[in-house]
Length: 202
Image 1 (tube, rainbow, N blue to C red):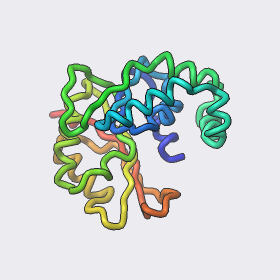
Image 2: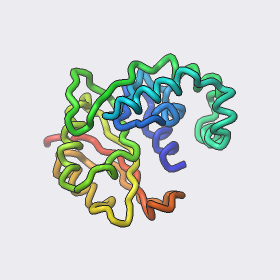
Image 3: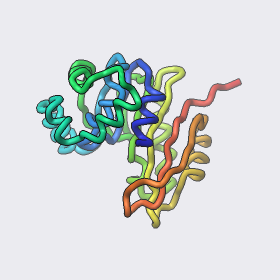
Image 4: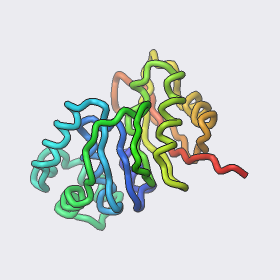
């Protein structure tokens, strides 16, 4: 619910890039596809991208109702202006591409209004790996764009919300939103949502 609420509140238009989407990018896109010009799904694992494309190809309102009835109820509560059919149609219509992309090495001429990084940064082994990833994603933003998402925190992880925020600021990003919460996942005792924007030189 925390993630869908963030996506519904923060994404209101423009071009969106979801980095490290795995095989669930289409699931998150149900929250915002109808309100953007286009969105691109990406992951560094080609197998995940291929699986994601297969899932999108067979996605229908019926499969949504069978697999994600709770999600549809939540989305109706957050944004009742679209039916399940309209969400699926928007997803198919607004999807620009599914690409192989490593967030720490990504090089593309495209620029985005919003970059989504859901459950991405907890996969980095060390806090020192955060800065290159954030700095590179910042280069992919248009002026005024933002990076948003959620990060899970495991018991043996070397950084949490405050350490993440400190690295973001050191990478030239302003922290517009940072909120910790308890996820419904036994392996992860805590998590946090975030919204970052490149610092404006004054």
